[in-house]
Image (tube, rainbow over all chains, first blue to last red; front, side, top):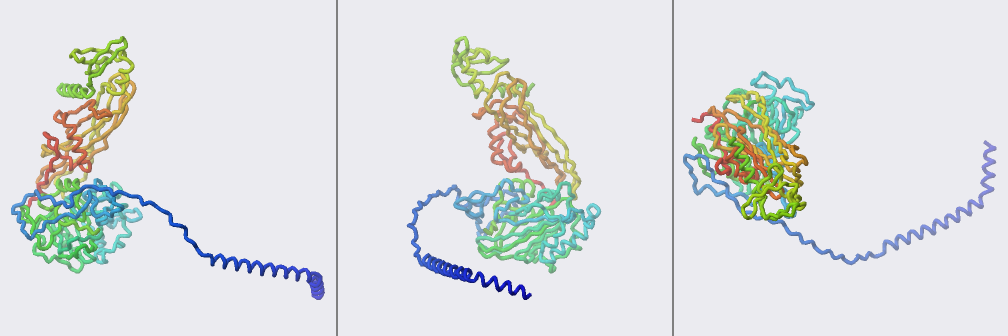
Length: 384
Length: 251
């Protein structure tokens, strides 16, 4: 220890002058550099910015594409059989909103409209949204999300499934939360419906059209639709609808219609065991008095739409056992008188959020009973 | 035999599209101011402006006239139509009164070059499949239209072939026990050149032979759906679709 101390001391003493000189030189250089940097930076910051002269940019004159269309289009008159066509002054001459081609209600970008290919629309709706529509998702409760078949949902042919009903009831009781169906197989594609006009069809068609794997047995499926609706003029409305096996409608989260089937083999079990949330019942005396599709028309509560103000509409339909099924929604406006069909029922306009493409009208006329619905007339509930 | 007459008459009628009066020259230095009438066994029949018919072998024509034939006058074609149908099993659905009959229909057209003469311009074939309502037969239906653009092969006897996509025709029983749905009844094949002139027509439905434009228009306006292509037999104009009588008795 002593030896080390002595060595160190000797080293310091021998180099002290050079080190000191080096430190002094470095200190002077450091100081000079610091002063230069500081002054340079301050100089640079203090330099005034002179904006360059503005560059002249000639404006491109874009010509908007103009398509000649009639500013208004009156709905077609019904040609269905009417025994007493009463049309009074109280019935407004409903006119479709101004539109260009079939892209009504779509966002306009720089004079061009985002046109959906309406020719690809089916009676179930389209694969692409046209803006004004309700988005539908199908859940097949016979199959799990993991691709495994769920045995509990099986039952003898044409027999009801208690587990299916339980799940439907759970959905209805839980604020229509789709999470209830999270464990079940969900359709790979969504469909966008701007109308609900499905006259009697084989229920496996729904699975096909929603892109479910081929060869699946129909039945035990539900479809949940949700979207915004509005009416430019506002008004008071209610739905006349029928759904086989069931159809429910909510407006802004409030149940306004339970339109389960009341005819056919499946009806008794639905009526006996199905739980309508909050014990909802139609207040209309006309409820279930008029034939519609394969059953009778169930009539919803009235609901009021402020002019142009959107509300959220949800439609929930489902099929338990399979076989033929149907789903029809017509709309009635308060204070309006409608022509009657040969059975004395009003020919109400089909509910729609966009005008129906002509090929859809042709197909629906082929499939639906004359006098059940007015396919081309009535208000358009487009929210956009 | 009747069909053969129809086809032949249509063929000769169709050739009128190429019948323009022009100067034809042969290699021997002869000239004819004449129009093309027909080609048979590699010889052309020309009709002079004086009304006289002249037969000239294709190989004897001048180079210029042979080129004209190669580009402007399609050779004889033989058109063969065939179809394939199968019945798709459709299980009984609850609510059905009877089993649905679902027929899957597909068709094939074979266009054979029936001449040694080369033809280098493109051609277009259109195949119209026609159906009718199984019960209300006054409702005819344009089931589908399939187009095929093609070049003729070089050699005589070689062919161009094209197929339709399969079509599903479903017939079901209504609640009044009537049957509804489309059934296949026939076809019409039209071959046209690049100028749109009809080269040849073949059909098993004689009443359609002069309604090609009407069929095209019907398809153009109703391309999105078969339900938009119901038509009247006489006029081949669109008809409103037949309506169902009811899902069940409503009285």
